[in-house]
Structure formats: structure tokens, C-alpha cells
Image (cartoon, rainbow, N blue to C red; front, side):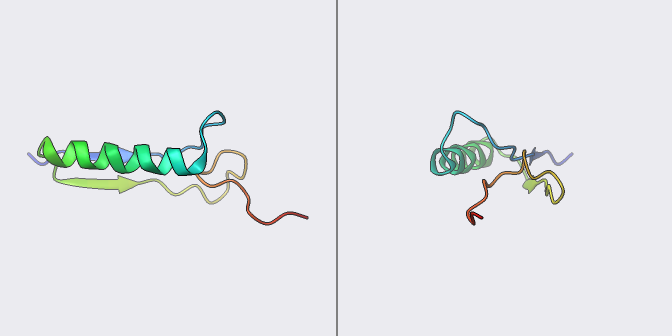
Length: 59
């Protein structure tokens, strides 16, 4: 049986994007050392307030 990681990548209000991505990379590296076979990431196209990136273009 192959086991993988599925990461939703929801934004966390108290964490800067840079720190969030660093933690995500650390998660992927950890599961790789544990022998997981794959990593997948959810795509949130229609969740503007909860996607993994905060808006970078202002009005």
C-alpha cells in the first residue's frame, strides 16, 4: 500500500506567508523521510478569504 500526504494549504491568519510555506516544505520533507510515496496539494480557486495566498494586488 502506498501512503501519501494531502495538504489543504489553508491560510493561517497569525502566520506570514513566508513562514507558512517554510512549514509546508518542512512537512513535505518530514513525510519523505518517513517513507510516504507522494504529496498532493488542494486547489482553492473560489475561496478568496481562505486560499493559501493573500491578495498581492490592492485596489
